[in-house]
Image (tube, rainbow, N blue to C red; front, side):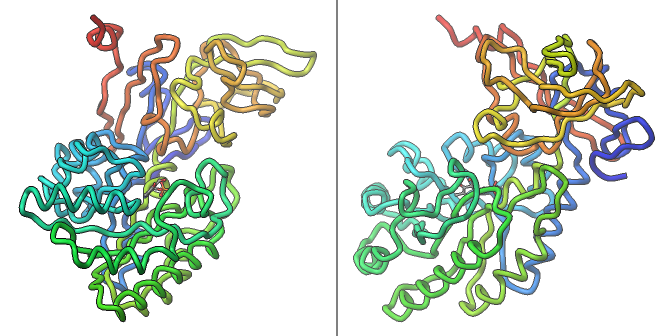
Length: 413
Ligand SMILES: Cc1ncc(COP(=O)(O)O)c(C=O)c1O
């Protein structure tokens, strides 16, 4: 039994009952399924098998060391979005040529770091950034490989906060400006253009925008090569979505079927930067009911020990996550607002959920929270970051211990 599945009344992760893990390790607690991570990584790899490709797992989705190591063991490379993520990638065993460095505002220190290491490519966001990379590289008498992040002005048709490919978004270089910029960059000693990059957004479930972005990259690559620029790879970013509510969405095979015929025309290596698609369904946030308060005759507030500090997606993006009891009771179904314990009205994990009338002390899972969950957790209200557990081969182990107040106060003078 792979992933989060119910057998009878009990919810399991890779065959291990989740209530046993929660009782042993406490809540709030993130639990990950190693088998799900492997299956989802391998599905992408298999879908692109017909074309030279490399998968650079987007660490921003979840960069806990054990998760990064697991993905490296599966053959993945890494996409890092900051110096911190570069260093985490290195600690997880990735080598610099296995890392691409993205990010809309890389500081000079971050660029120095990536250039000194010799990462596979720096995904460039602006003409100013090319000049900075060129200057740093020239001073070090080195030539840095860069890919131009193109803003193709394609609407990803996802939540506006995770849409990145429109000209109104801050990301990348407008596609019409790229040929001129490349012509200029060819004469710089400190940079070597090796690729084009586009990432148009996240949680994309409509494949047409991804195909449009792929088409834009292929057309641009052909134009640039005609003008003498050597291009080795096309980096199509991440973005492929998952089903949060159980309705069917395209998977890796459908994604590949939509973009590969276009990308193959280029004859170039394809770089992919998936995050959410691999890791979201591989994680669940376990939480315990603190209190049940009657809101109206037939509606309840269920106050959990996890809230926006552990999982901010529902508040930040109005995101939906399934919320289920770890052990289902026979209590009658009632309408519940599942809320966190923080001093914010927006601290709500799920509204109007029909649940078997919850009782204080019961355990619940907030599902599909492996991506952009623990990485976005905070210490607001002086709450402590939750522990994380990985289930692998029928066993579980803590991969990040629960934070203590001493950990937090250690920074304060
Ligand atoms: C440049 C880049 N690549 C990859 C990703 C990963 O996206 P996702 O988790 O949707 O696959 C992101 C996240 O937004 C990103 O900004």
